[in-house]
Length: 112
Length: 114
Image (tube, rainbow over all chains, first blue to last red):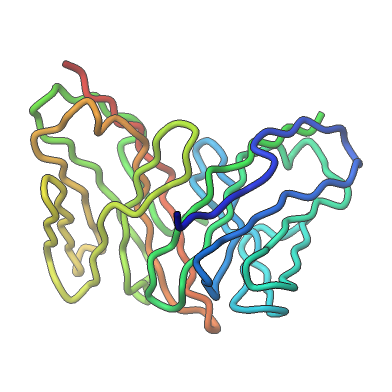
């Protein structure tokens, strides 16, 4: 089944404790993105990647890092999480320009 | 700065009725306008999309109406069903340095009541 998977689905952590949210897609898509969803704000792009080793900032990149060492994986790293990063995070992938974007099931992160 | 404004924030429609969600955009460089449907605990999924060279696109009970001069587009759900209860996001896309950048509206929570 073609899908985007994220782990973990739920995470509660404390301020400053480094964490990684994994994202993997099995559709051989070139483009991958991370979004955060907050009430009243919709979805906002954090980082995106157009291919292996090619990443760039989206609209709200502060406090986040990403890497794209393999085509299928695009982990989101929070080196020192803060409470304002409490949010619902979605990974997404698409085959290329004009292709449909597929979203993962989401990771609900709470930083206390 | 919000480039895509969506209304209403929430909507309650009786079963069989028409649900209408509206979006307005500012940047004329947007060239692709998708709508996403999101059920609780799930990621958004593409529902229907339109490009600005047409004024309407219909897929089953779902129709996008697009008004380029007014910079507005809307989603119409005909014969609304309880299974349509979800959050709907409009979006607008444009190419920025090779990135097909999607800008989302704030979402509409739709509830269909029997």
